[in-house]
Image (cartoon, rainbow, N blue to C red; front, side, top):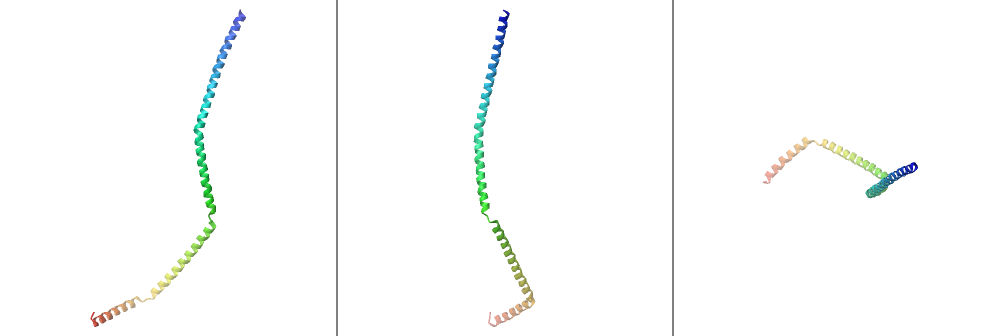
Length: 136
């Protein structure tokens, strides 16, 4: 009988262990399902965002390529030479204008304004006398 009781006790322990194992299997299964649902949810929300980001990156890269091509077409050496030529021509023009201005100032200094004023007064006096002579 003792052996029978021991066998029953062992069978009860085995039954308890089997119930615990079944419970652990259910918990593991639920955990796996939960992880799968979360992974699918994350994938569903992130994939469109990643696609949008990749599209934006592609557009930016295309624009950058176009800008690079445009910059490669620019003749910086020719532009630099043109600016240098323009600067030289501008400097020559300014020097020429300054020379002409200096010459004009010298000519104006040669004018005797006092004599000019006196000549104008004499002309005025003569013209008024002539106007009276002709009745005007």
